[in-house]
Picture 1 (cartoon, rainbow, N blue to C red):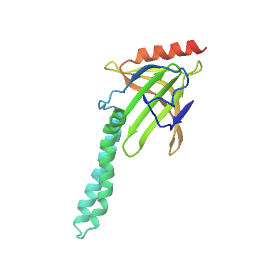
Picture 2: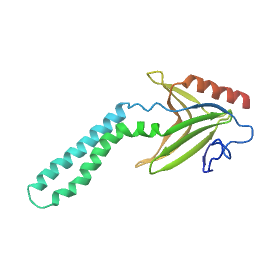
Picture 3: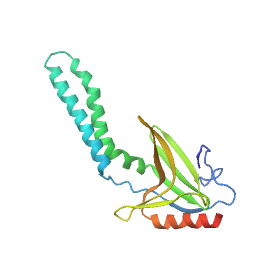
Picture 4: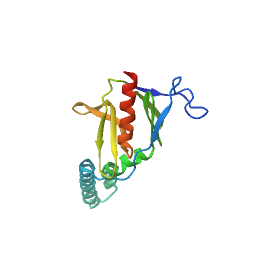
Length: 183
């Protein structure tokens, strides 16, 4: 179960957010390196094709004279944004993300320009399904919740967790210990 926390942090930053007796057991940040995988490759190719089509259309429209070709600039810009956003977007979000694990909950904090600050808490109970996805370069993702994302054909389940952290096995162990302590 997740809960958005809109409290204004005071003091050490956690006053008004923690429950009585709740203590931090781990804090970290995701690796923000650019990673070029299949999803990024597809997004980049689609964006470049979209921008390329717009560029060809603009050049043909420019031969007719006038400024009609400028209507293609929005499509060209969208194509470039899709191409480079699919590669550079996720690392940018990770660069503005912080993780905290307490003896009761997991917190994901983001501070994104134009979106503002957001702090979401996830209860870790004995029933919480926790998984570890190990990646190369000593990085791992520890998933402990999920959310549903709207797609054009309905919705899709997306895992939520501490993404691309160096201490994945340590965090998994702390969460398993929390589950045993609360049972």
